[in-house]
Length: 139
Image: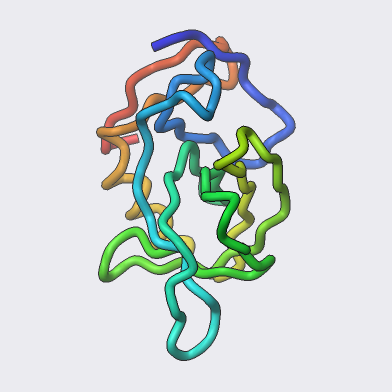
């Protein structure tokens, strides 16, 4: 894994599911998710790919062609849905937009369990040393 600089301004340690030195539009790694409308039935907006995640939020790539509202639900699997607010948007290509999400629900334990499950796919940047490590489920 390539070395990346730690971001000490973040409240939570961020888990990366992509290569930091490669541009987002050419990356092939990540965690596939569905973006849903908020509300009782939560119709699907689009498919997206999570590039990084922490207990506080996530960064993901979504298609530009789909209008993603500011409040959404991110569905990782049939059991895991997390309500989020889009706090950052950056177009990375003519087809993709990078969205920065902040989790809105109080389900910290659910997010922690999700991070544990996804840890085998992630690499983690150490805040102190600036080095990248493979994460383990015990961390």
